[in-house]
Image (cartoon, rainbow, N blue to C red; front, side):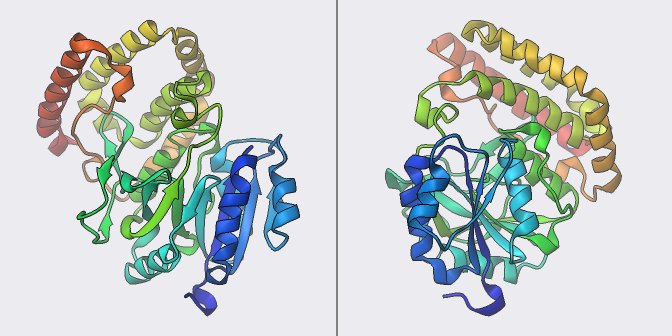
Length: 356
């Protein structure tokens, strides 16, 4: 049990999650004594999400966004209005173990340099298996999952620093954040959490993975989540391509861009092959157009990040296998090329890491 000033705000970010509201908000209300308040930030839902919460859970405070500007904008809004300096954010399909909140609070209290603490996430429909347990930052500009799809039993439960954060569930200490509105709302969705995590670390904050704190993740948002849809939506493809480019342009030093440019070129060629084979060329063209249309804004944000950073990229990035999802490389020839590229990239990183 948490008491007094230690109690955080629980902030549930929702968009069209009516099918989750009774389960997610009901589970949160059952743990209400752990929180200073339960806040629902609704991203201009077009279903009856808000009505369900108002009808069944009148103690929940509701902040309704005027339009859907993505989960990053909703989190920024939650940070502004939360009663507590510590805020535990969860998506609308996440529930928490009874001791999750207290464990995250204790982890932040024990590590004054940490601004973010994230729980271990298990699959709600298979809670013996880890979905992820922290996040890495691959030098090619994408997030990687730590301990994905492994049995939870017997894994290390020690608190550790991690390179990035996946925002389906995470706690922040608002007073320790280097930026007071830390989510870049131009990302809309996808990699906005990776941009947040890596940028906070570049500016001096620490991110903790706390495996003893546990959350359970459901199916995700219809129309966007692969688990919900079984396929890549057009919006997902566009945002993943655009946001990776934007993330690299904002956050990587000039030296890193130069040193890593040969691998970026090979990666882009591999991505182009996938784009053509999957019929995603319209999304790719749209992403290119967006980057050039917003070039001045991206460069302004780049200057703001680079002028304040306290850590070099070699402390923020890592190597490892090329982070293509398995469903993007079908057939033995594609899998062979993927493994060959991964081996080449790993060797390149070993030589390049000390130069950035």
